[in-house]
Image 1 (cartoon, rainbow, N blue to C red):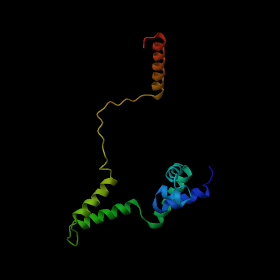
Image 2 (image 1 turned 180 degrees about the vertical axis):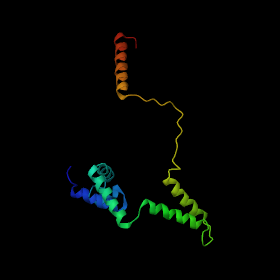
Image 3 (image 1 turned 45 degrees about the vertical axis):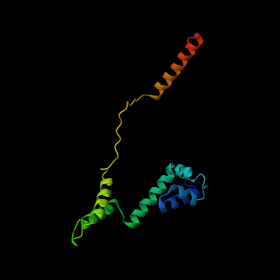
Image 4 (image 1 turned 30 degrees about the vertical axis):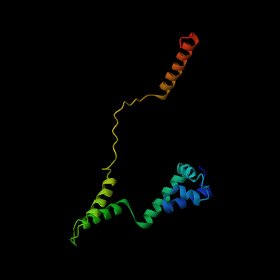
Length: 146
């Protein structure tokens, strides 16, 4: 594959600043009118995605911030706010910490109830049925029965 273009490289660097593809596209020199589409298109480019991931990996290594660090900090904060050493209880902080940990563990995923009938079929079958219906309609029109 070809290397990143200079504009794509700038997009990657700008994206790593705030993780906002639209703003990164604008700062990289893409049109404001099409920045959202350009950001989306750039994000679907394999080389751009690899460059972004490499940049994020370098930053994580440089700052030594890992998922374990973040989760441990949240856990320690929750335990402190529950009335640890300084005997203070901060229910809002405890609930927020538990919420973040629960999200990480996917305990609060939205579930959608579906009461209707779900049909799964092959697109080819649908196309064949459609052509057959068109054919039948034409036959009826030709015979004057419609």
